[in-house]
Length: 102
Image (cartoon, rainbow, N blue to C red):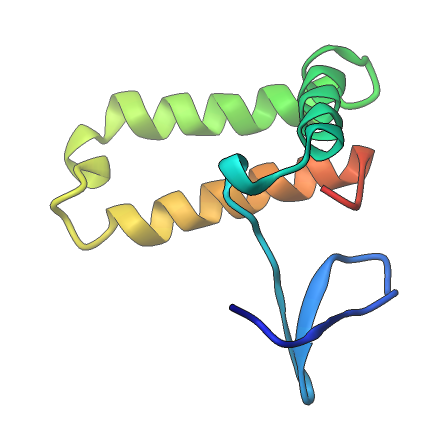
């Protein structure tokens, strides 16, 4: 378990001394309010006209990578985990445009 503090710098970060990283919780540990905020953010980015182009671009890049490079995305290859981490980071950044506290 982390023992850092959450900075008030518009990003949910866990800070140890001078280095910071994002703190993510498992879905099963979220409170109902946190789950609702996450679901609302997903609904917003996937339907609101101001976020929809960003959402569609991200989903399109995911689909293109997935359908054109099955071997690249194979979990047994060394490229899958970095690619997947990048995609999740981009997805998280998009959701945080709606609600920075998720």
